[in-house]
View 1 (tube, protein in one colour):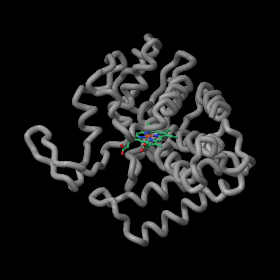
View 2 (view 1 turned 120 degrees about the vertical axis):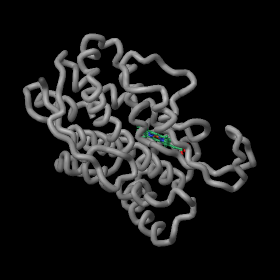
View 3 (view 1 turned 30 degrees about the horizontal axis):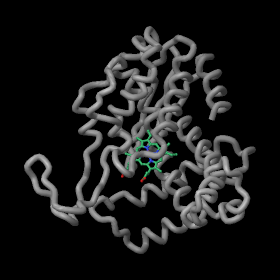
View 4 (view 1 turned 180 degrees about the vertical axis):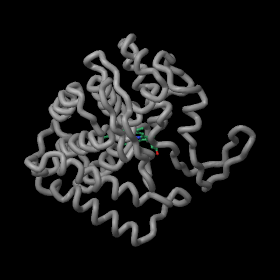
Length: 281
Ligand code: HEM
């Protein structure tokens, strides 16, 4: 991602407008290509990255309208299988020899089967693309909208706090579904075994208040924007690194930026900007 970010930064610092929503899609497309060793024609540049992102988006969108049940209808399963095949077909050939320092090689060394490795690769693709791209552009928007850009320029020591706060107030995965395994009492209500519940993570995370770069870590919140328990986000450190790199690109020269125009994504699983154009001030 570094080279593409450096290229964007040079143009941005020279005063050109920059669509952060699109740049984020390109960056995470590139990240997932690297992570899974996808065979992509690098000479196609951004177009190849955007295509990978769009494939992940198509796969994730199959989950739209399925929150009430974990059983997917056959036509959705068939659609998903096609996309997964497209994304993981290359793994058959590389699985036996992939270097142990790659995701696929490490899966093999840990004793995962080819099928499990393809499953994990698919999960990384679905879980790590739209969420991270959403957070990158929305972090910039929330910094600008809250007026906190100038404070962050004056106090760069709060960069890490700003990343955490951006994750908290945006909570790109705004709700998480769970099945109740055994009857349990929560806040005076009995949840019965077999019921489905939705955990409203965005709502819970935002109780603490508005975005503030100097808000301290809230121990009771833990990092609920990354989930909790056995399914805690596997990509949390990567997501934080991506956001930190985005902040460096935006503010690294010590000057602020403004939002020139924005367009919201519609009918998406993860709330995100379709376009967010920013420019140096
Ligand atoms: C800002 C970015 C991200 C957010 C807000 C986020 C959020 C979450 C949340 C809430 C969960 C838990 C879902 C549940 O319990 O049902 C989760 C799981 C997961 N995330 Fe992330 N995620 C982000 C980025 C990433 C990245 C970059 C990757 C990897 C490339 C990733 C990989 C995963 C995986 C593999 C799981 C499933 C873990 C399991 O089920 O054991 N995530 N994520």
